[in-house]
Length: 219
Ligand code: B1M
Image 1 (cartoon, rainbow, N blue to C red):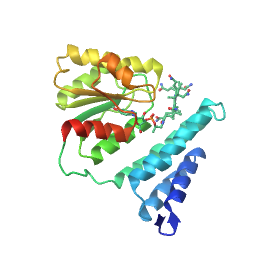
Image 2: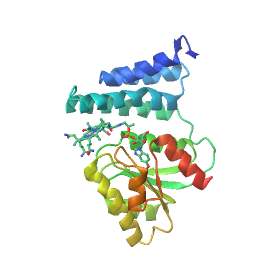
Image 3: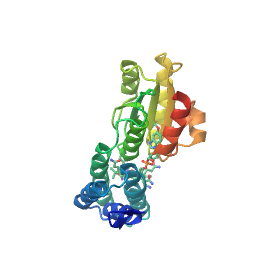
C-alpha cells in the first residue's frame, strides 16, 4: 500500500525506529507526518510504535540498553501516541456501549499498554474513565461507584503488582459491587489462567482482544 509516496511498511518502520532510537522529536514528527499522509492512526500505534517499544523491551531484557534509555523511549512512545489519538474518531459506533473504569495497579508505573487499551475502547464506543497508573485499590472501587461502572479493568506488568489484581477482586466483592461489574485484567504478566484463578471475568492479551471480548458482552 502506498500512502503519498511512502508505503505503509516504510511508515511503520520509521515509527519503530524512532522508538528504538529513543528520539522523541522524530517520533512526534513521524506521528504528525504519517497523519498528513493519510495513515491510519490505530495502525501506527499498534503496528509501528508498539513494535518499537516491544523491541526496546527485548534489548532491555538482554542488557543491551539500560533503564535511562528505556525511560526516554517510553516518553517518545507516549508523545507519539498522544498525537495519533487526537486523530481518532470519538467512537466508531456513535453510541456508548458501557462505562469502563481502567487503571494500572498500585506500585506499577507501566501505562503505555493501558493507554492503548483506553484509546481502542474509546474508538469502539466505550466510555473510558482512565484513572492512570499507580492506582490504589480503594480508588478503583470508589471510582467504579462514582461512575457507575459496568466494567473495571486493571493492568499489571510486574509480578510484584499482579497481586493487586487479586486484591481488587476482593475489594470489589467487599464493596458489594462485584455482581454489578465485569472485571477484565491485562498486562504482560496476566494470563487466562491468572484471570480464572483470581475470579476475574475476562483476560485480554492485547488491546484488540480487550475490545473484542467487551464488545461481545455489551453490543
Ligand atoms: Co519496566 N518492566 N520496569 N519499564 N518495562 C517490564 C514490565 C519488565 C518485564 C522488563 C524486564 O525486566 N524484562 C520488568 C517486570 C518483570 C516482572 O516483574 N515480571 C520491568 C521492570 C522490572 C521495571 C522496573 C522495576 C525497572 C527498574 O527500575 N529496575 C521499573 C518499575 C517501575 C514501576 O512500575 N514501579 C520499570 C520501569 C519502566 C519504565 C518507566 C522505563 C518503562 C514504562 C514507561 C511507561 O509505561 N510509561 C518500562 C517499560 C517500557 C517496560 C517494557 C520494556 C515494555 C512495556 C510496554 O510498554 N510494552 C517491559 C518489558 C515487556 O513487557 N516485555 C517492562 C508495550 C505495551 C504496548 O505492551 O504494556 O504489555 P503492554 O500492553 C499490552 C498488553 O499487555 C495488553 O494490551 C496492551 C496493548 O496491546 N494490556 C491489557 C495491557 N494492559 C491491559 C489491560 C487490559 C487488557 C489488556 O484490560 C484491563
